[in-house]
Image (cartoon, rainbow, N blue to C red; front, side):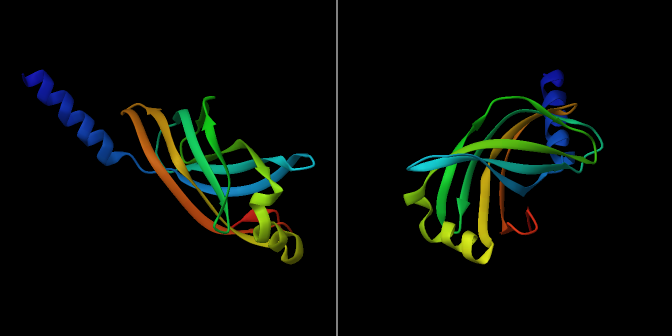
Length: 148
């Protein structure tokens, strides 16, 4: 009984001391274009504010451009985010031209577009495994090649 209570207390303490990683959009890289659509690699920067490395086990994502869903998926490959450092994560996204509409025109004409990237990720830490959501909005500039 005491062992079970101690394990539960450690899990609660671990969750309390776990700091949420910060996910931001870094860039879009067009990887293919066809008659009806194409594919892009969405590059995210994942910052780890913790004093220990995060071993990411999986990540789901949805990328919206303005209010239009560009694509979604799951990344099952593992990646490591060093302590108090960042790692870049490439997410493959397929899209249709019809789905982009005004958002695509805005990027082509103005060079900027609003974005939202969201999902969840599961990380392994010395304190246990954690699954946490992330949701980030900003403005992407094709001129500077980064999100804010």
